[in-house]
Image 1 (spheres, rainbow, N blue to C red):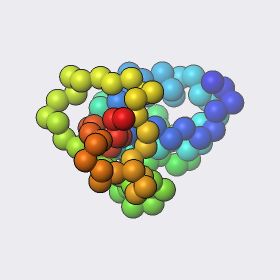
Image 2: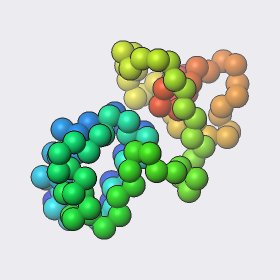
Image 3: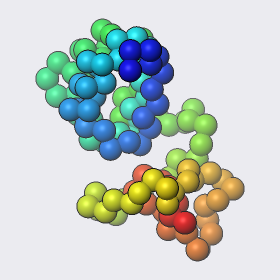
Length: 111
């Protein structure tokens, strides 16, 4: 994706391998949001590559205070469960808190 400039991956299960692929294939990337991407560990020279090539990098442990949506984190103790994306919608203040929904580990509500 050579034309990609902004990539928000907030709360994604991306790993260092995926991040390397992004760096290799997105030469014009200027803004990368990795907040709550808990599988990104910046092993080897990965952090250096990010800081040299991308103007704004939000790290997995950076604050979420300016994220435009409500952030919910549910720790199930395991990443073994996978639910297709079409069963989820972002957890906003209009949707969570209702007992008929289950919130997953990524802060999305299962319908």
